[in-house]
Length: 303
Image 1 (cartoon, rainbow, N blue to C red):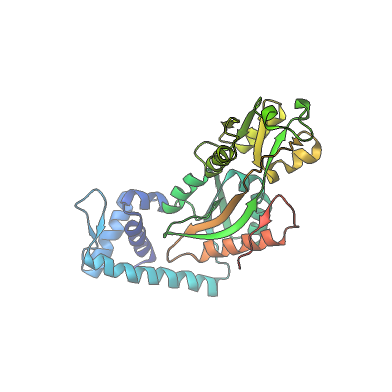
Image 2: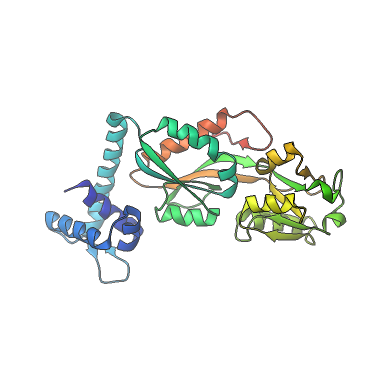
């Protein structure tokens, strides 16, 4: 019995298909099928009922899943205790746009220093897509809009990001700007499918500002660029435009609209091998807590 066979069995059992497990392991379905056949031969039982579209565990398979989880957990503990670094090989990180352009650059530098034997891959996607990636175990950890309410996901509070309404100086929106003046401009902001967009739209409707025109964009960097060009206003996390505000290419628009903050979390899948994601998550919390206090990114106390 090998760890490859046990890990293959565990992933097929938890993901529900050979295809998803093969994608996670970067292997062919025939390779996985051969491993399971060898494992079933060794154990003398059938682990999966393959009669349906999704594989289902047999009674013997459900029983062996308990042991498989223990074995994989013990392997992870042994690597941590004896092998030194908990994080090895390729570690896949997902990040929402805001986190990718604010916290992640500095954190990745610290992460590589702490775990020099690991290779870190980064994917930037909306939080709803990151959740699918976590559940499919295509990524190991994500910095995303939270909290995540899913029994299969560990969700740790990370930070809150206040929002700012900004504009190019040539639009002449300095000082206190009434809502009717804002209505003359498009407001570029998050993609329509994101939680921040819906929270912002709901907030505007509830405060009688539903007439304001939100223009969703699927890239915060594009929102900043369009806003700098004077094509409209930008409703973005303050941390995303800190450099532009300091340089004067954007100015903060003062209005009676109190934009809602966005809360982010660190999330990773529940499972026997959470040692590495937990270590990366703890290091991220440590990194954020050590940053100078500012009003753009607010650390969420874990207590």
